[in-house]
Image (tube, rainbow, N blue to C red; front, top):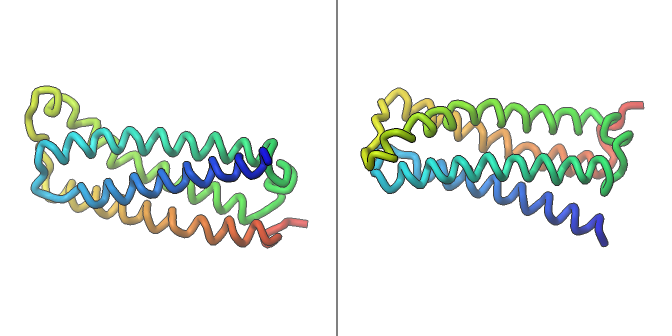
Amino acid sequence: MIYAVAAYLHFLAIFLLVALLVLEHQLFRLPLTLERARSLFRIDLMFGVAAGLVLITGAARALRYGKGLDYYLHNSLFHAKIGLFVLVALLSIYPTVTFLGWRGALKAGELPKVTARTGRWVTLVIRVELLVLLSIPLLAASMARGFGVIV
């Protein structure tokens, strides 16, 4: 039963991560409003927490509640999956730094200044993050069926 609970918690964390990124994508449009800017700031922080939960629950599954670390370390699809997750983490730095830069303006009750160029880049990065995240379940499903094992 604990294996099913571990898988369930991992899936919940993944769903939360994707939902927060979709919400971020929906809320980030220019011109910003103060309310949306505040929401984006908070949602991005929650996105970071959700990413941490995905890592923790994924590590728990790999180390204790899955097929065993040896299986995962000898599976090329697992490495690809982790690589894509790291790519999403690296991509998320740009929107996060942008939103953290708003902290002073938001505390002062002011609307953050966002150039059209920054707006285009943040939107593009969030869309690429979503695309990469949506490819990870294909690798996971293939891996669960025994593909990618390195002999």
